[in-house]
Length: 143
Image (cartoon, rainbow, N blue to C red):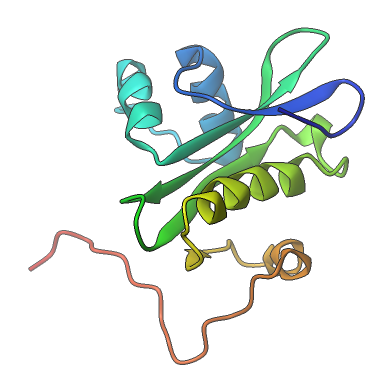
């Protein structure tokens, strides 16, 4: 558990309220109507690490992020989001720091992510750099 502001803590969790996580995914613009909220518990359990920023006054999640990894070698940070009214308070930075600590504690030192355009400057002070010579690709299902 990490303190960000006096009213927000970061916690690595194995479970969290499905509705709150869906709300965060919607805030990030990543939730589609065809997704099933009942998949959230498996999504959290299937992550190497899942961090939630918790408003201690309400107990509600105001941010999240996760790492995908086999727990041995590489890690990939994704789904980092903080509700707009809680941004610019260091919460996102603390979520990333908690996820990186979990990785490095497990011996995972190769950690990457794909940043949305315009957000790169958020990650640079945390030790992330562009991967020169590499291009992120997305499988579209078209063969």
